[in-house]
Length: 456
Image (cartoon, rainbow, N blue to C red; front, side):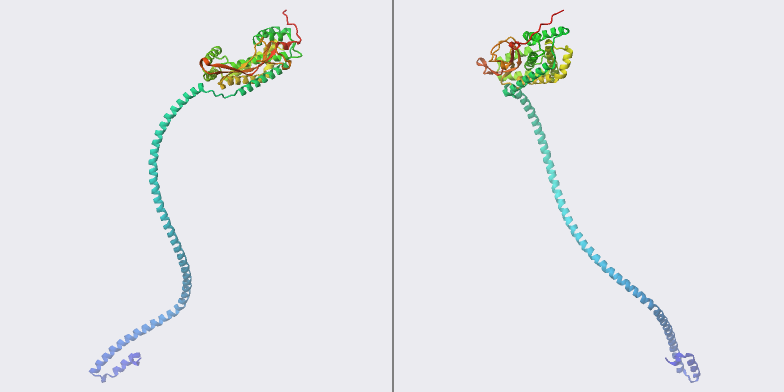
């Protein structure tokens, strides 16, 4: 830089000293130089200001350089961390993008499946509407068929009842065979015999004067049931050592009562025993076996239902038989009076008598209702009748008797009668399925007698 620029005051002084040398041109030059100097001075001042500013900025820059370096290190660390996080974020973003693509694929599949389901649903709805329409049509058809079926069922029931009514009179099928009926009769006979034996061995017999009136009354009653001959023997034979005659009398009374139970139409509940028997006799004479057999079965079944309840019939029959057997023992000279004997009898033998009634009632139904192809009935021999080996068996099988007089019946027999043909050419065929057993009057021969009780 020129010296005069650095020392302008000196320069101007010097210029003033040279005034005498100046001229007009010189003066102009000086003015130009002065302008130039002023401009240069302004430039210098400006440059100095800029230099100071630059120096100041340089100082500030030097001061900030350390902090900038520290900041730069910090920012570098942050940048590295941010870069690492960015990489991780990018990796996660890539993973999420892959997952999103998978979700998009699944969504696409689900949308396709949903679309297919919607199509299927629409198809099913159409099918359902079609089925509903068909259902209504079928329901209407079913209702029509149901009405028709009900009409047919009503008609069928009417025809069935009519057919059953016809079959009831036309069918000859039995629900029980003859062999089964024979077995039932044998079982009844065995039960009667055993019961009579047990009863006769369970009481003591010795006529006492104080029982004379009871014995007289009892003898009158037994005479009607088992006959005067047996009644007389009961009152004269000593039974203390051997009660065989009492057993036979008890058997005879029970057999006779059982025969009535088997043969009865209504257990006397309608008081129509004789009229029904006569009507059946006429039906049997004029109608075929099938018709008469079914008439018998139906009439007996309904007559018994109307007459009495089954439980009432049973208890009534048990009471009658028990009373009859006690009366027989009183007539034979039982040591106890009627009330005591009856009480002991019912306690010891009530169940056995009840069983006999059940067995006889079963035979009533078997012979009266379950066998219609023929007529079956229990047989017996009347007291005083001549013994016939063709139609009877001797109670005492070891005696070898071929003749004699019947004292009483001890076991029921069984007879079968079947009507063959119709009209004038019809005939009844008779068969003996089992012979009744009878006790002969000779059985009392040799038994020790005692005098009848006399009045006072």
